[in-house]
Image (tube, rainbow, N blue to C red):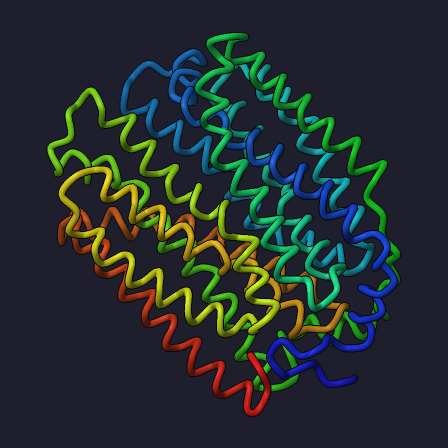
Length: 423
């Protein structure tokens, strides 16, 4: 078995190169379709946020505490299922191609979204949201396709553009969900979302192209036995998976307590919901603006350096958030934090693509997706625990400490793995 690539951002093994070169004529068009599909899928998954408790109540849940619990369960079910199944879909993408996985996700989302609008019990709602995560994952499939098809020198930029589409979907989804139900009703909002995904599904089937040659089964099986055959490769992949989890954990440890923070700042009760929404949107908006430019920087100076520098920047930006006096100061700092976070996940995907062979890239990138969803689950739990026992300021300070520690560990890994290679 040929050794895996061990240098940072080094050109990928020959089979990976042959895959990207075979698809050189397709990647730009595929990127456009994937950005649109990622945007529509994330809009559809997040648009129910503003009206989810109302929908749960319409389904027969009347007690306030139960409404909150079922709402959280219904929303989280999709992302939990996506995180659990990402490595499986990645492995199948290595075996049968990236395009079939993208089509599978598009068809699954287009079929299930209207069914959510037909749910007649809260159990059905949760099961359908779970099913959407099990068979969906369009953004994850898009990331795998673009990460492996794009030429090496453009991968960071392309992944940044793709990330911009997903971030924009997360930003626009709740806004759409706040408007459409008042115009067409809650159930018809799900039908409209299904129609939007159906357009992305048709575009995916008709426009996305791939020239795929599966790796030999014996090689794929050997590579799947472990992350890599060399210590530098294992350190690189382990660092990337841990950092992927850390990025989402850091962001999500703060999001659930923003409303509580605004209450502590004596924000007028009539403005708390609006101001909290603006603060949350500020971070996403900052990421939308800078994901692609930072991806271009990663192409120029290397993924490792971007990861280390921007982990430090994010950690430092978190500290003054603990000492704000009015809501708009927190919004400005969250906007800056969104800018510093934006390039991290594309750089992580770029590093993984450059560190593993074609026959195992899908599976490892799937593990990266699972790590991110783990961070999304652990972040709110950690933030709530620290906030309840040590106070709100401690959440910002301790999260900052974790990011700075992550930057230090990534810096050590960079020096260990790179040697004389550029990051």
